[in-house]
Length: 313
Image 1 (spheres, rainbow, N blue to C red):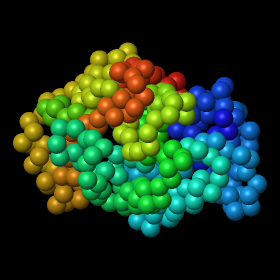
Image 2: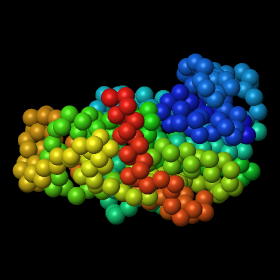
Image 3: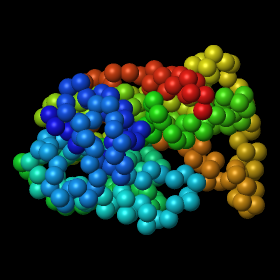
């Protein structure tokens, strides 16, 4: 098939090209257009109006503004990129001969934190902050223009990791790599992750199989605690993990003090570090007719950490 990938030069785009180029003809759409192995040509966004793109079978929309965990980005930037670019590429898709559209949204479009045991697709979306709000606005635009003769998929992945990853996982790795003990070992939280290898596998299946249009969560099969994640990191690095179980009452008190004094450890950051965020991938596995993802969460994370070790971030 002819596949158009927006944001093709990003982390996920590069991995998708590597996974798809053997079987499909890949075109890119991005704000930059350097040559890229496996990509026939990369177009600019203005080219959508000029009607110069070749016939496309599948559109994969990755382009977007990532969640700024430091909260330094202006809210409007998220809507200008995450919402308006989605509207632009979806309108192109509707007017084109392409039959499949895959939009990379985020679990943050559904919920900033999980109130129950597990996040499923039937939750009433309640995003908190411009990142999640801009993603749900993009989802709503897509859903407002149904197209029965085409397949449209909204994919909501949780934290994606793998070769070329840049994000919170790198920050935790840098702490562990320096030998700094993890002081929050007394908190038993569980979080879901998404290996980019499992993600690429799902995209390949979405392209090949005729599965129903809809919203699908994406994550690995197993949720892990931060303590387990640190153990996996240390094992991949050939080190012993250093996890301290400091009294949570003391930590909570320090976080409250940090909130008052505007210190790095505050109530919000402590919640982010210790909260549960478990995502169900049952719906996508049922649609694809599989019982489990190709690689486990531990295998995927080990591969990611080993890639960090090679470049010594």
